[in-house]
Each structure stands twice: as structure tokens, then as C-alpha cells.
Image (cartoon, rainbow, N blue to C red; front, side, top):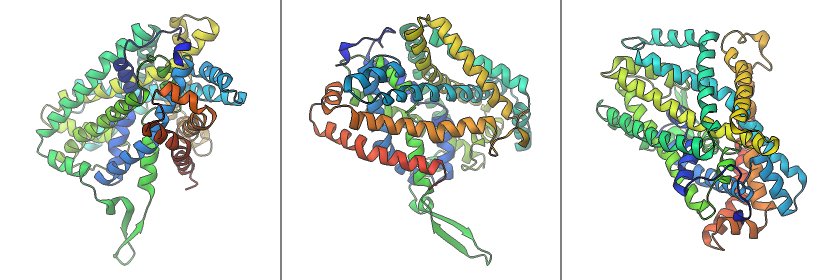
Length: 471
């Protein structure tokens, strides 16, 4: 059992704190930035229903598996996999699963810090009234000018990375736990305030209707006018694939973060129950973000399918035009920063934990070392939007940011989740997983085992093939 090992980094003080930490890891830019715009692009309510089904079939089973591995090993992902490979008599190559998670998280952190720096900058831009009364052309011009300035991006990238390093350097109880117990309640409070504000705008009903009223015709059929002006509709499975992919990525699976957080989980806490709460909370944040954003979009005559520019180009137009927009726009970007910060500290933790375990480093220099390396690598992403954006600096038609994003999101993360499911479902003995999950031979245990052995890996393969353009 997990009690046979103990983490040298300490443990969360309670199951509730672990849940807050895991929710903090899962809730990030994907919930507040990506989920609203992909919902807008894929038909609203029907897409939400498909997404929730995908969470149940792919996200929750693999999250249970990753927490299980972490608590069983009680170390950084690299050392956890080494220990479990030895315990289960598995081939040594399975140890690479730990390395893959840490490297993936490190790469993600390098560009995540740059994008989070945008949100941090927009807190101050909104607070000083930069968007007040601005039209669409002015808001877009401000954003493009912001991206074109390497020096400005460097300041915000550096500040966000320092914020992340400071928390992680203070350890599990003194840093991570204190941060999540402050950030997560504040995040939910800010979301509720923004939802309440959206209710006062007069378009709240339209926003709810868009978000929760399913129209499967919009999801499964793409319609356009032909040369003669007649409407032609064709079947499209694209929204299902998008929902599958986001259900996997939104829970921070496959990058070592959930595994290392699981290693700090109390041994008497139920992994399955904790996962259920985490999944519900993560989904609730995404839906609340939609409830806050879409009424603002509709009240100002904007388009819900605005794509990635919804947060940094479309919403500032709305905040600049609406009553008290300066205040609530500032609160919105503070919310975005909190979500990004809570995720970033979980992403950096696996590498820091490994340095402490294997090289005898104290947490302060370990956090500074990993953070500095990720900061340096992030310069490639930062310059991808300006000095290195030209075709002569691109590879396969992609900038440095595009390449790192593609490698992590489309290849490394799906592979990590796939092999986590295979290891927990096929390599670990039934006795080991049953012992750690503390569920006996219940229907719930057999259901999880079936999903993690057959359904989840198959769906991750579909996500992977879609991501690389095969389907």
C-alpha cells in the first residue's frame, strides 16, 4: 500500500486540500480561455453535453489512474515510475513514462508563462482604462502592438515565472498548500461575481440558452451556401473530436502534475471520490466561465464563435463599452491570472521534486533552476510573436511557439495519457490497483478497470490521430 512509502516533500494536510490543489492544477487557461470559445465554435449546448460524456469516458478514468500511480510511488513522477516498475516486475522501459511527463510539463511551462503574462498585463491595462470607450480597431491594435514588443512581453513573462517559482520554493505545506487554499476560493468567488454581473446585462437568458439548449443539428451538420445560393449541409464529426481532446487536456493529464500531487495525497483518502469532486469542480468552472462570458458577448452584439481572440480582443471591446466595465474587466483578468498561476505551480513541481530527490538540492535553488530554464526556453515563444515570426525562422511552416505547442498538445500529452492508462490497467496487478483504490471488487472498481483498459486508451488514440491530422 502507499503507506509503505512516504514522501520526503511532505503531504497535503487533508483530502480537501488535495482536491483544491488538483482542481487548481486542472483549472487553467483552458477552462476560462479555451472552453468558452470552442463551445461557441461548435454549437453551444449540444457540444457541452458531448463534452460531459467525454469527461466521464476519458478524463475521469485516466485521472484516477494517474493519482493512483502517484500515491503508490510517493515520489516525483520519474522516481515513482522507477519504483512501480520494480514493484510490478515490469520492463524497465516503462520508467520512461515518468521522464515523459516531467519533460512535457517543462515544455508546457515555457510557453504557458508567456501566455499567462498576457493575462497579467491585461489586469493592469484594464485597470487603468486602456479599453474604456475603445472600438474594435483600437482594441485589436493594442493587442497587436503588445505582441510586437519583445521588451514588454519579457517583463510580464519574467514576472509570472518569478511568481510561480516563489510559491514552489516554499514547499508543499508552506507554498503549494497555502497558495491553492487562497487562490481557488478566490477564483470561484470572482467567477460568481462575474456571473452575477452578467445577469444584470439583459442578455443572460440568451447566454444560458446558447450554453445549455442543445441543437445537435448545429453540432453534427455543417451548412453553407453553394454556387447557386442553395444551402448544402454535410455531416461533420469534428465537434466530437474537439470535445474528446478538450476533455483529456482540461484535467492536466499526462504531464506529471496530477501524479506528483497524488504522491502528496493522504493514504486514507478515497482516490475515486476525490477525482469525482475534481472533475465536477473543473467542469463547473468551465460552465461558469461560459455563463459569465456569453451574456457579455451577446449584450454587446459580439460573436460567440470569435475563436482564440475572444479573451484578448473581443471581451476587452465589451468591457470598454459596458457600465462598470473597467472594474469587472479587471476582475476577469485577475481571475485568468489566478487560474494560470494555480496550474503553473503544479506544472513546475514534478521537475523540482526530482531535483530535490536525486541531487540533494534545497527547494529554493531547485525551483530557481527549473524556473530559469523554463523562462529561457520561453524566450523562443516570446520572440515567435515578433522578431522570429518571419518565414525564415519557421520550421514546417510553424514558429517556435507553434512547434512546442504542437509537440506537447498533440503528441506528448496524448501519449502520456495513453501509457498511464495502459500501465494502470494492464501492467499493474489487479491486487495493486484494488489495494490503492480501496474499492474492493465493487461495481465501481470493475467499471473503472474496464474503462481504463479498453475505452479510455481507444479514445486517446482517436484524440491523437485527430490531433496529428490523420482523422
